[in-house]
Image (cartoon, rainbow, N blue to C red; front, side, top):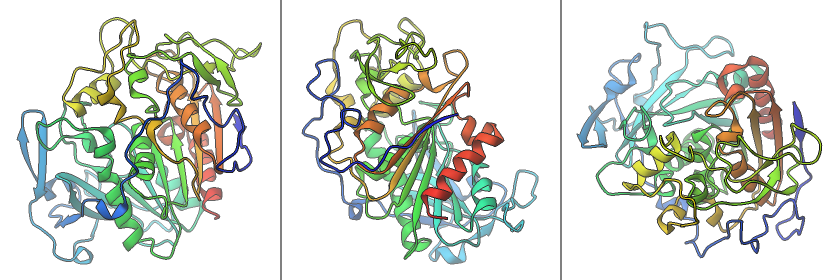
Length: 417
């Protein structure tokens, strides 16, 4: 494991490794994007009664129209405190916390036409919200057990109903509620609203942090930078993402040669046609120090990818597809983090990248590491970069116990526990 933890950058700093060169014609540039939406504009959560603690999906009624799904409560809940249940696994056994073997609790809710749930410890002080990858459709995230065992913090798994199969097999929080195309930025209002509710009801007067994996990093960081959650988020850990610095680059519509070395995040010149990171050049003589650009996250010929599929599904478009010549589609920029106005935060943000295995789709060099590095370098406040060489995408989230524990220790330290 290689770890880089730079010092705190000031917002107006001129460190060349910290800020991508916006004058470089090969690199993405900031646009006149609308300012981040205030948290007061977030949709409200409506809670549902849970008739079956081992099947939270029974709390909802789904209305399907083509590849869109809209949810309502099977039975609305007027007072959320009266609708907390002890959650169970599929066999009916209680899901237990690693701290004192206490039964985990659950709440079911609707927000912006999407069904979701919280699975949380009944005890704890400061709060950490965890979010799984793809559509975030997990019931309970095993990563939480490392936080429970190593701290006194309350953990909250934020999960979603399966939703459509139009993007992933279980599209989850990305699910459109009707046929109208939207953006990833707009849909992150759903996790943002859930996180704001947690702050108001579980973390009032306490610290609040998040952990996201893969596309769950889009949900958690997108909630932060696009929806006015800066005042309430004290820490974030991003495992294997987000691959959303420049969606046009991820789709292969533009080709960027400016990149950053994956060991020390210093600027480098890479391959603008790198697909899945298979052919990224090295930084100097060290073969495991590679120059990562915002990679084309799809094959250069045929087949498409999960990245293509989810972007096209969300936008109800076919614009996310590789081209040989640059052909930026401005509608895709609305889902890109390169347009965030400010990258200076009061809380620390840590990144964990894991590189190993053939591509696609086993490691972060093909799952957006070049995008991650652009986001990391844009941040002008406390941050950390961990590069796990020889590991696979998501190993620190739910596969390798030693890496999961190491990632949890980053959270515990970042939250001051």
